[in-house]
Amino acid sequence: MNQFLAMENFRKWIPLLVLIGLALFFTAVNPNFLSFRNFARIAISASPALMVAVGVTFVILMGSIDLSMEGTVAVCAVLFALMLNALGGSIAGWGWMAIPGTLFVGAILGAINGLIHVQLKIPSFMASLSLGFVGIGLSLLITGGNRIQIEDPIFRSLLTLRIGGFALMSYAALAALLIAWFIQDNTTIGRNFYAIGGGEDLARSSGLNVGKLRITGFVVAGIFFALGAIFAVARLGIAETETGRNFMFVSVTSVVVGGTALRGGSGGVWNTLVGVLIVNVIGNGMVVIGLPDYFQDGVLGLLVIAAVYLSTDRRSLSFVK
Amino acid sequence: MNGGLTYTERMRRHFPWITLVSALLLVGMTDINFLSPENLLNLATDIVPLLVMAVGMTLVIYIGSIDLSSQSIANMATVLTTISLPALGVGSGLLVIAAGLLFGAISGVVTARLKVPSFISTLAVGGIALSVGQFASGQQALHMDAEQRKHAFGWIMGTTAGIPHELIVALAIVAVAWFIQNRMTAGRTFKAIGAAEPVVVASGIRVERYKILAFALSGMFAAIAGLMFSVRLSGGSPTLAEGFLLPAIVAVLVGGTPLTGGVGGVTNTLIGTMIVAVVRSSMLYLNIPATGQQIFFGLVLIVAIATTIDRSKLRIVK
Image 1 (tube, each protein chain N blue to C red):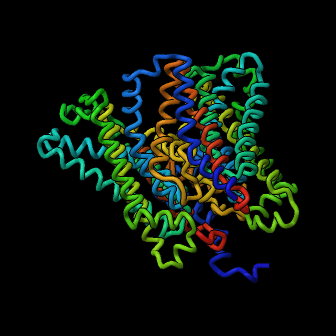
Image 2: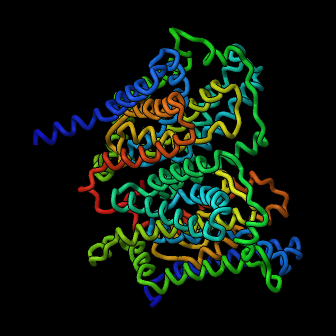
Image 3: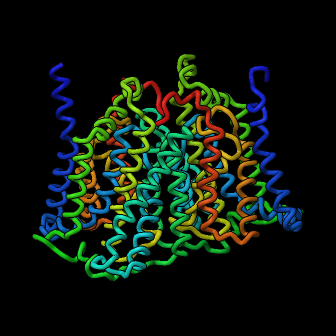
């Protein structure tokens, strides 16, 4: 029994060890990897991804999944840019209203997602995948396929303003992560997500309103997707349908690789931070050591399979669809 | 036989073709030319690659799983066909089919043996296929040599008595899939797995092998879809088949194979694909922009799942 516990304890640290191992490996191949400037670069590319991955973490903790992020991020990004430009084009003026506005849009999209999943009793991966497609179509319809430029220097300071070498965006993402941590560990909602993921029957018989909680989970996820959209727009200075591209694969990979179990109930936002860093270190490191970036999808694919395989307790599963 | 079924359940079986006929009539009322044999033939030929992909997808949904890698495998197939055409000629087709089988089998092994849920395993394998496609193509659009294409795949492109060969090939492929599904042990086992997997396990059937086979076949059909698409467009690129995944899943579900599997099948998907084709082209007739289609099909997908899914198999909906 003690040995089993020791094994479980060790397992918890595997993602972090993988992250350190990867960093050491890339440094050994090309010492330029281990530079302050490169770390700042990784932190910038990881910020939007971290927000989206943290959002989906809450849903995965409940044992569901949200695959709508590409559509949600696209819609939020495009609407954010439109609102900002319509309200004067500057965060310093009335334009700041675009930020709560976008978070609200994200919450609404999440709520629709959750309602369809819970009320129509459709498995969440399919409900959210369908809505993701709808979102992509919607953002294309809004923009007509065009790009929207954001030129507000104050908003762009999320990228351009550096404090201690790191972009302001990275600090903002860290702050949002702390909020997510607070939600997860110190609110009833957060604890109940774990309860549902650990065993829905038990959660239900303990008197939890599981349906309502599931919808709440999707709303929280939607708000974080919207945050990710805002950071993604800040990073590139443009909003378009393409802004949402690849977020689905990358964020689900990050969560899983970070050690949050797909069946729900274990893991959390700190795991997701490690997972996002692993994914971004691989992406960055492959460029640094001179491998073309299109190998990334393949490497991430293998990583996901390995991570889910290692985190699944196959004795407790009868069959998997 | 039907004694145990309620009236709605018996009616449900007929929904797909009733939908198809009413859609055809509806569009036909606004423009009678739509129903001309020539237009309908064009419509059917146009949808061939999608049909082949959807047929493969059917086998996986039939066992209650899902394959999200089809589009990536088809993308990869367009690239591999174009690259290997000069060296292998018609053999490039075999190479692509083998590649599809391999990638599908990997999804199957990861799902059945490593117990990774299929939507994740196929997403991951799709990522790998995407990388292979990008690597092999050097991230460029490639073109086939007209002479080589004609020599190797000219037989797919022509027409006989006004019927495009592409359509004949597609129907032959559907027939093969139908035979596998209805006349072979494998197909009957797929149905059993979809209907009640624990029972099949308890009957001592090696469920894992059949699951792997279903995924492998789905990969193969996706690769054939990519092959036919690249022959039609005379080239390949790692993004050529973009936009196939949603209509393929819609075709299967609208055809009447529920997400939980066990009923429906290949002929249902044939009807489902035609519904998709009619809806698509009627939207062109009604001047609805292409972006509207994606929204529409996304919503249709939700409705189709909600109305066909067998909730008695899902004790807890996750």
